[in-house]
Image (tube, rainbow, N blue to C red):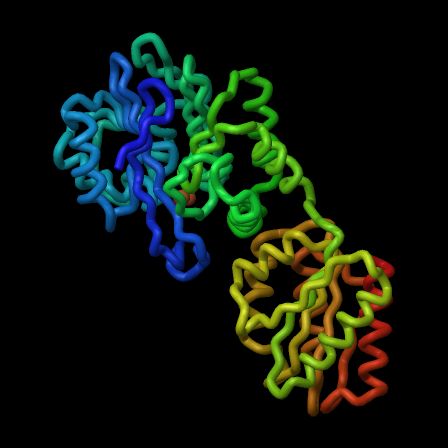
Length: 395
Ligand code: FEO
């Protein structure tokens, strides 16, 4: 399928309806995804990015129906990760001399992955590639989300090809932001930001400020995943500015794992207490081992406070809790409060360990957490209730 976007600009990517896990098993894609490749057929013909390797045959076959491959004058690689560059080896076997425009880091990334001496042309911010009456203008966008990333902007049609930025894992043949379910779209966008872009908040803010200062008229944003932003494209830029600024909503999230339900009972009473302390706050209680890691991270991203629970096992915490805490640490959340709780039978180290992990991960931890030996009784349930209430009052 190819799809005309505007004048001589076409979408020639692949919608992956069946994708449920991305980045290996690291990212859940409940709604599938798409690998967006774009073809511009002005006096000169330019192809922006390709699709993931498993779809390379299909991609090249459909691309050949849209354009004579030998007439492609330029290939633009906005970002070298395999979901966008994976079809290059097969394409380059057919048109080996075609120049590939990318950043200096893009060359490193492509050479490192494919070990090919293709006809690389290195570009920097402000460089232009003339296509006839229109130009492609390149803007380096390092760490949105790889060091090699760049944006490409098409003058005349006022289209920003933004690579992974402003993208989302969302399969839809409706193609445009104004045609799809708005709740689903926003949810997939915030999930994408929370799980992938949070560590690069400062770069996101700076890059948006730089691009805004260029005063480029903007009619459409074409990201590398998901639908294109044609209706009020600035809305997703505004969202990114909010999300990059220590984002939090009026929400407290309680995450936990439990071996014999003691820690679960603590969680339930803490949640009751939070509701008492702040009846207006959104409270989410999520079990880690049966939940989806990326959905949990998204809820943490939205929260002003996170309370984590684990029983003590082998003087440590449960492996599922340790795993998600490692992920949370890497994302580098800012401006959130943290608390901890857990049951124990003998030694009881889990709460102290959790508080340490939360502090290391940038959370503001202002109490020692709450431990319960053996199964929680009525007295412990009351302490959990008070803990939750006080946490809500401070958060
Ligand atoms: Fe969609 Fe960073 O690749």
